[in-house]
Amino acid sequence: MNILNSERWESGSDFHWYNDFDKENATNSFYNNNILLGTGRYALRLIIEWGRIKYNWRRIWIPSYFCPDVIESVLLTGIDTEFYYDDPIYGCNIYEAKYINGDVILVNNLFGYRSQPNYDSLPRSNIQIIEDHSHDPWSDWSINSSADWCFASLRKSIPVSDGAILWSPVRHQLPPQPQTITNHYQASLEKYVGMLLKAIYLQGDPVEKEYYRGFLTRGEKQLGISKISGITNFSRQQLFKIPIDFIRQRKNQNRDILIAKINNLKTFQILQPDQTPNCCPFSVILYFNTTRIRKIFFDSFVGNKIYPAILWPVKEELNNNLPASNINFSEKMLSLHCDFRYSSEDMNRIAEIIIKELNK
Ligand SMILES: Cc1ncc(COP(=O)(O)O)c(C=O)c1O
Image (tube, rainbow, N blue to C red):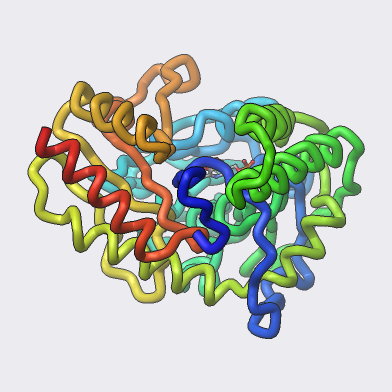
């Protein structure tokens, strides 16, 4: 990391505030003429509410392997839900469901690993398709999408405390842009303060880790759970200053560096994306041989100040037909951050920690 203070080195978890971009190269046409929301969940809720009024949507098909917080926010809209099979290893099957008029399918570019699906065999005049591009908002698939609707949470890929985008590749009429509401503004502001404090902490200045963590956790808990809100003005301004090509190139380089060092180890597999041009996968996904070994590595990572994510812990109460392969994957995976914050030295350090743990 550029602002690295060696005693405070850490990797993963929330972004710190970072503004040291080459703003000359920032590209911004993606954000024009589309709707900017506070979170991905608001984007999805907004489009579901719009689709229920405008197109009489009655039922949404959700991938079986999906973010539980997002499923919970879909349930808030009152639309009926069904699940179709989707799995990080075995892929997704949107083709065999029995669709009826008023159905809408939610398709996810899981971990940014997927190639663009072919929708030709689907009854497109009776059903609509929403795509979730949160894991790689600027992929070729996202840019060339043929779905009715697309959305992406932006705050997972770039350092903003809130932000998501909603658009219609086939140019359906978009819903009106929602206002930014006070509760959302306050939640995002709390996160923003946490990001600033984390940046100060990483520089070695006097901020307690618990202090910035408190702001980040409180902010995160409040995001996405209020009335549907537009993006805050401070995140909107920031979007236009972040050079996406740089963000994507650096992540891909870091990913390659880390994978090259840990590729042939027997304790885990590394998930690989479909062969698809111009993709920028979300992270390095390790799939361990057993849940016990996953735990050993998780503890070792945290002990070395590397904070991986579990995407996602299963919540069987949300889908009581959750496929066994989904549960198995969820219990054995870890997602390691490799985004623009990090340098090749950071990736080497993570690889060394992994190899040291293996040699214990
Ligand atoms: C695939 C995916 N889509 C949507 C979201 C929701 O994004 P947000 O947290 O901005 O509501 C998440 C959140 O983690 C996600 O992982």
